Image 1 (cartoon, one colour):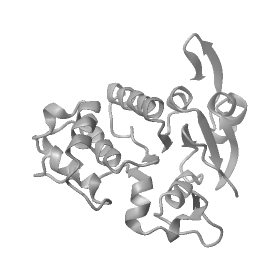
Image 2 (tube, rainbow, N blue to C red; image 1 turned 180 degrees about the horizontal axis):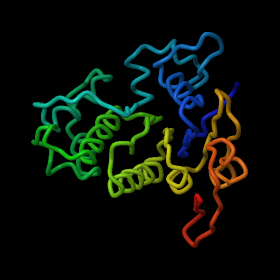
Image 3 (cartoon, rainbow, N blue to C red; image 1 turned 30 degrees about the horizontal axis):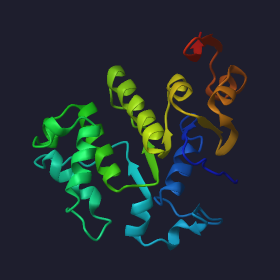
Length: 229
């Protein structure tokens, strides 16, 4: 299997549980080492990168993050600078990221006091402090209510557009993938079934047999929508 992640776009990995999307995600983020083949970053095998050098290029926001009950937001976000020699010293970047993610008013609060949506923005801030070229997110909306799901995905789109950040994430919601990703990779039984522009991939003809659903594609002024019935 060969796949190339498109630069400066949002790509969503989507498919049923056990379809292979999590395996590819783990391979791309060095959580799993391939038995054969290579994962290349800037034409180099990612496993040849020293950990700090890899972290300067790739940042990861996991589905579940360790909770540091007594750590303040500002101290946790500073940890994103660990891959750099001048870690904990880039106060200008820290201030800009806290402002950008609307976390400045929360910077002195303990992480345990924040809502799920606020915590997710904090972990995103940690990732952005790494100043990465690529941002990977594993099911970033799973534990958020509907309002925070959409506000977080809108934030990712803003980061992609304004900072030219390449983003790859796993989502379960087909319509969220349609709305917020440029490209989608559709998985089933450990294989890539289709990949390309989301509006061309997330269509009833492809998704219905894979997810065992019945759907129809509805075109609206703001984009396509898959209605299940």
